[in-house]
Image (cartoon, rainbow over the protein chains, first blue to last red):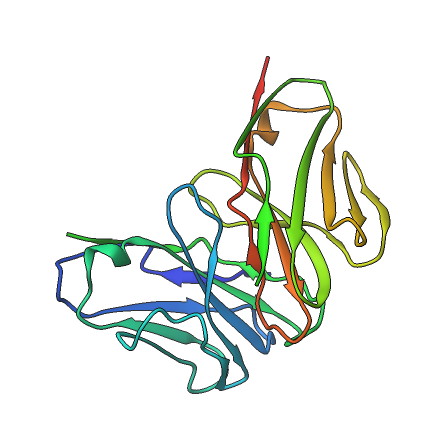
Length: 116
Length: 110
């Protein structure tokens, strides 16, 4: 079956612009996560959705970052007034179970964001 | 707070055995994961340990000691395709996300 998909695979933008990154989780997975990975680092948690609601957004670095999941499936990560420090690979993961469970997280291929 | 330590890089020979160590400090431990990540690709799940002991899955095994805050990933009969980064990640009680280490980049040489 299909895995987690993310679009676009690469995004180049200019400082100050707005970007949207999309994630299509595995069908039926209720939990969805966004992570950010800089070169040579492990993924860093940004936000977690259980269904349609953002159950934990404690990892979002500031109010320029926002994410939605209006129908409990596809999610969009939105970054306003992008800065060069936002350049990273943005990974999405989904899981059939949510908080506190040992459910394996299935990762998408990521979107490589470059802010010039 | 929480912290994960793992070696930055390791090199091993094809056909050999390699052990990648991970130590962690966290409040309220709820499991440890190992992921494999090839360059430019998504992390893929290898193993999950929540109880002390060894979990074996084919050529890969993972060990956990909760009292020592220590885990290792053991790779046997190394193949060239095993060259990748290996990420140790902890799930702590009440959290919804994995906390990852920086990863160990393994290079398998002929």
